[in-house]
Length: 318
Ligand SMILES: NC(=O)c1ccc[n+]([C@@H]2O[C@H](COP(=O)([O-])OP(=O)(O)OC[C@H]3O[C@@H](n4cnc5c(N)ncnc54)[C@H](OP(=O)(O)O)[C@@H]3O)[C@@H](O)[C@H]2O)c1
Image 1 (cartoon, protein in one colour):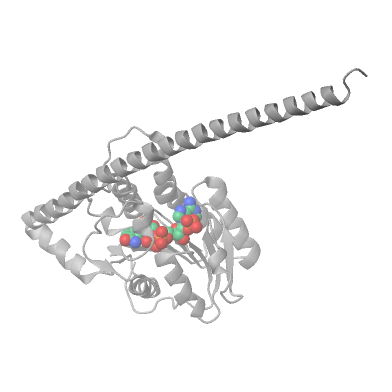
Image 2: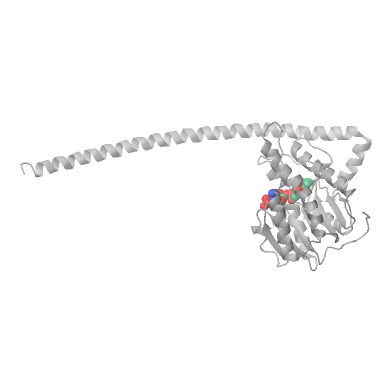
């Protein structure tokens, strides 16, 4: 794909955007919603926060991690717009963790959202275009090109998507532009989703406004790839010519994972203590309740006996 200036200015377009309710997607939505004549189907599982947008944005609650979910998105867009000029598959999520488990479903869930869904979207979009021009955009990740400790499953899901876009570029028809975004750490909900226990983010961290702006410019100029961090681009070149630099970077990130594991162990200890205290408190409360119940029963029995005696006295001999 030739990289020229403003091949397709994003205006007067019918757009589908997934992951539109938060972070990078929400910023892309804000910026595209301003584009003259744009109509946008804004997709996420929870879309309550999108109701304040103007009428050119249609919030659509849908889980894109299944074939049925992606089909529903296409059906809705076709019903609303009749055509899709730009499909931006941005939805995705991370885990930050030590990979030390045998939970098949946990791995499966990530690959369904981050990898299989965008791959299926490609095929579905080509069928929708039927030879007409269109743009497919993906949010991949810098981690989809350089793996990171703590992100084994996430890295592999994004590496797989990156491999897919690389291969499919070689066989795709000319009517389709594919533009991929490779953000470094970006200040979104991503890190809260990755693990509820706080951890150190990889360096550097960017603002979603900047990342979204770079991606829209990249789409408009027909770029194949958009890397919003110049520093990361420079570091990648540096690591290519001087691999020890990468080794040092990885060591620093591995040290962060080690510190996180310690914090997690402390968190679990605290959690166990809290559970123990709650169980003890529960026991005390039920003991007190039992004693109270016995007191009440005794009291009632005494009162009943008294009433019985009184009745016996009053009606004695009758
Ligand atoms: N932030 C970073 O550091 C960073 C770096 C590199 C790449 N990325 C990539 O950037 C993309 C956007 O992430 P973000 O940083 O903006 O995180 P975010 O703030 O957590 O936003 C993720 C968005 O995806 C949606 N989503 C997640 N699973 C979905 C599903 N099954 N169906 C429909 N929507 C779903 C979420 O909404 P609901 O939960 O309501 O569905 C939300 O709108 C992801 O692909 C992520 O992997 C992020």
